[in-house]
Image 1 (cartoon, rainbow, N blue to C red):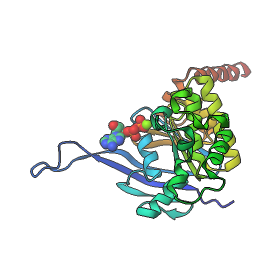
Image 2 (image 1 turned 180 degrees about the vertical axis):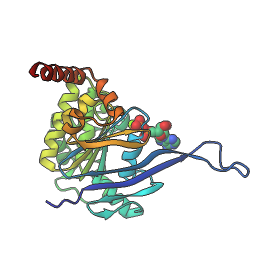
Image 3 (image 1 turned 180 degrees about the horizontal axis):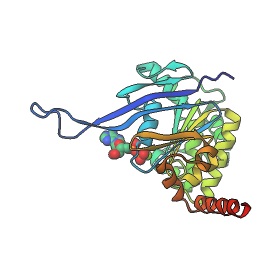
Image 4 (image 1 turned 90 degrees about the horizontal axis):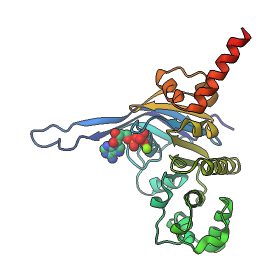
Length: 279
Ligand SMILES: Nc1ncnc2c1ncn2[C@@H]1O[C@H](COP(=O)(O)OP(=O)(O)O)[C@@H](O)[C@H]1O
Ligand SMILES: [Mg+2]
């Protein structure tokens, strides 16, 4: 395996214009939402982007997935500079980088059957689908732990966890190299969260995709991440391997985030008591 990261972001900057500026006598002003963010995501690994709401996580993910254009900075996919791709080349890249969103119901068309939903990314390719869409849809449902007999149902007939499995099946349809999960388990109950996380880990083991996993919940991040980047006000303030960041946070902001998770805080306190007792 080469050391080349699958997805390499360097100094990503995104500025949005301030509404109401930019007239003849009002110079256009902008505010910076993502401010020189860099990261490497390797195949088969999960990089978690963590931070409070509004810190710029989703915008960073959208830049990296080339859903929006950068103000400056670069994105490389498997060594290829994809920062300014357009048209057909961009469509190709967008297929290799698939997204799973927070609210499965709002990202699944309620009027489409599951078969149509999960095979949509394949149909965009306008190539013949080996075995036909029904067979492919059945196989995809099976992969994400759903009964293949459900292919004729509509999203409203599923639970939140099942709907998220459908969203994952759709993302997998085109064999992505990178899966971007933007708060993909945040709206689910804790027990369902664990099931979806296990599913993602299992699929990643089989498929080898890199996963950019965005979450504000550090308890969830600890279950899935290989490495962690902590982001606040559009800047990465701390990054490293998961256990290093969790066990030895360097930045005050990271400590604050960690201390806000009761389970993590109580583990710290137990470790400190143990150390004190050993002295
Ligand atoms: N298209 C946009 N136009 C203007 N501001 C935006 C746009 N998208 C996001 N923002 C702003 O950028 C900031 C970061 O948003 P976001 O990346 O969604 O944060 P997070 O995912 O960490 O909650 C927020 O202040 C948000 O209002
Ligand atoms: Mg977000």
